[in-house]
Image (tube, rainbow, N blue to C red; front, side, top):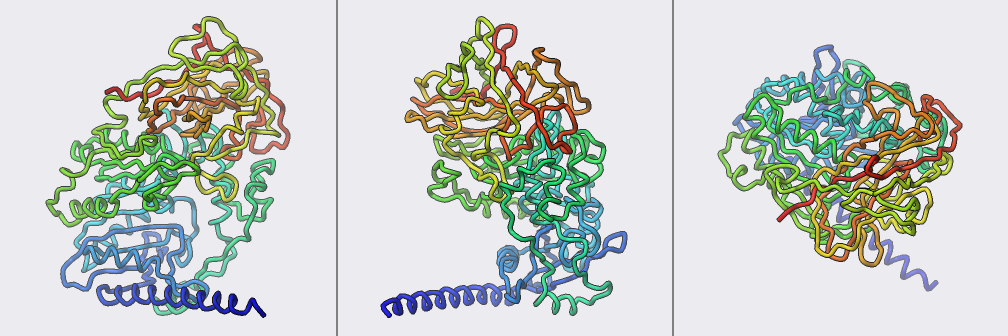
Amino acid sequence: MKRHPIIILVVIAYCFITNFNLLAQNKILQELEEIAIIDQKIMMPMRDGIRLATDIYRPKTDKKVPIIFSRTPYNFNSWGDGEQKTRTAQKALEVVKKGYAYVVQNERGRYFSEGEWDILGVPLTDGYDAFTWMKNQSWSNGKIGTLGCSSTAEWQMAVAALDHPSHAAMVPQGFGAGVGRIGKINEQGNWYRGGVEQMLFFAWLYSVEQDKFKPRIPAGATQEDLIRISRFYDLDPENPPVDMAEALKHLPIQDILKNINGKHEIFDKMITRKPNDEAWFKGGIYHDNMEIGVPSFWFASWYDVSITPNLALYNHVRNNSKDATIRDNQYLVIAPTLHCAYTRASENTIVGERNVGDARLNYDEQIYAWFDLWLKDEQNDFKEKTPRVQYYTMGSNKWQASETWPPKNAKLTTYYLNSNGKANSALGDGKLKTSKAKSDSPDSFTYNPMAPVPSYGGNVCCTGNAVQGGAFDQQQMETRDDILVYTTDVLKEGVEISGFIESTLYVSSDVKDTDFTIKLIDVYPDGTAYNLDETIQRVRYREGYDKEVFMEKDQVYKVDLTPMSTSNYFKKGHRIRIEISSSNFPRFARNLNTGGNNYDEKEGIIANNKVHHSSKYPSQIKLPIISN
């Protein structure tokens, strides 16, 4: 009986919160209806007759207006499970208040859009055709800006390369899965790093790919039919929840989705492609042989899955566009957050376990000023007020500005691996020094693919419960003997590292093929060891991704790893550290060490791996240290 008052209070609180949320939703919808013409479930025709579901929200005005366009594989339907949703309406209200039409569209084959879906909304012509359709509307001023994060951003670059005259500006955020080959970096849209599969897509495809036997709206359904149907059926079937930490352990990896009863047709195509497969160059991924002729405001983040390719793409466009005006109209923001978490930064921004301070930024103000400049032809002060590159330095916990990336005063300083052959774990004798080791005392460790080094934090997204992204204390990890640890002496003065971190290892093994990983660490005076970035290289691809060159037993090979990236201030009393191993699972797929395809294999073999360091074998890491 005594519980009754508590139960009553809980019920009252629940009812209050529910009613409050309903009132807030109704206010958003009412305000939007007052200022906007709302046209939902427009079926926009593509050149092959396929129609894409599109919602349009535009100001109630007789004047022609510019357009902010978001194309997405995700569900933006206004109804779900019989309840009205206001997320899209809230964004539309914000955009319309700024004097723009907001157009949101589902990619081909997603939800109410017709056709069959593939990653990045191919064919590319769908984006071009959408621009043409929007330009030709009587209410359009003919200028379109594209906006979005993650899958809503990743299609933008390749479509920008088609050079539609109405594509006036873009704001891609967290766009790594749209980046293929940029110079020596060859990730093919986050599928690979260093020739090793990144397992985020294994988990992501399970969550988003819908069954080919899903119910379809009959061809020729009217707009009125679609709006009515969408109120009670949002075409959004959900796969049952899966313990992805367990699912990703399955071998062979080509059967991971099949093993959890997921749809796997797209996955089956991708898992067999090698890093330089011609199929990567025929889809929706941007490559460095494509020209971008669009003014662009890029957003990246230190703990996103693809920070280095994203920064490399910015530099590529900034330095190599054929049009000087385009080169001059590239801007960049680098936040200290996880994937697409820019606006979730707070006065005390926590990324994983690490507090990186007040990382807030006036994102909306800057983005709309950018669009005002290019879509409304407003002669505003965006260029005068906005630094070319805005980047957040962790450790000192502040926003900084630079005309270039890396900053011009970043000087690559080489630190060499040193030890007496016992660098295993943080209890070992591994050192980072500015001088080379006098003699080669290689550090050895055993890599067992059936007992890999587990991923703990990191620059990652979209893996379900398998990996939590961000900075985490690596001390417990560093007790493992299959992790080599190299650390500087205690810093007598603070050091800022901002830019690309290059690393070269001289390695040997008793197997035909294996992987090597590196992780960059900030070590606090109390021993806390926060990870900053990480990379990996499959040794068979050390000479390029267009060929596989296997190892011979105990021969020493030079291996250059994909650069890491960060901006971090190592305070006085801290130490700089790297960890080296041969696995980081399930952040990256395990190398089974056989020299085979790997994706179709169940059994691995143990590798006895060595890292060499001497004048002859100068294993090293190059740190971009900021000089005063």
